[in-house]
Image 1 (spheres, rainbow, N blue to C red):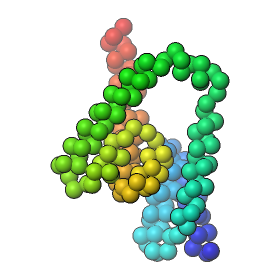
Image 2: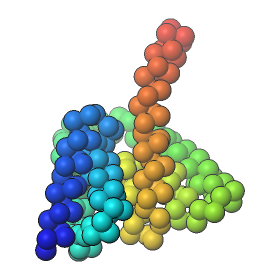
Image 3: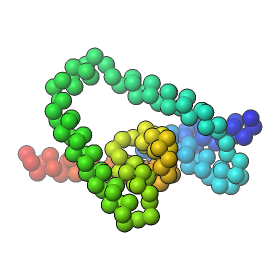
Image 4: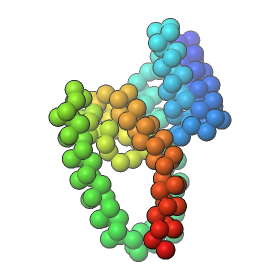
Length: 164
């Protein structure tokens, strides 16, 4: 029980630090890094795997809070662009994931999850359920998130002024 409390405390401290210093997905990334460091140093980090279900339920509830009546009405208006976008992204991600699998020593499931569109938390949980190397998937998604957040505002600004 003490190992669980220590691990949760390290996750909480790391999550708060990650959030406060404004790391993308700071709560998740901060907790992951602090528990990873704690486990590396002590070898004592432990949370029972059965708690993963509770984490998934809470995360699912938080994501569900985004859906309102207005969201469903808006979906009707943008259904075709969503379908085209999703199909295009899935196809491109599968192709790039397969290329990563072929040119590296990353297994296919991990490579595909590395390229899967979605949030770090959601993809990491799905990757873990499917037997992928979760740490590799998280590193890929964290790098993607940092780069997108860093460069997209500038790219959007340049494109929006250029197209006008």
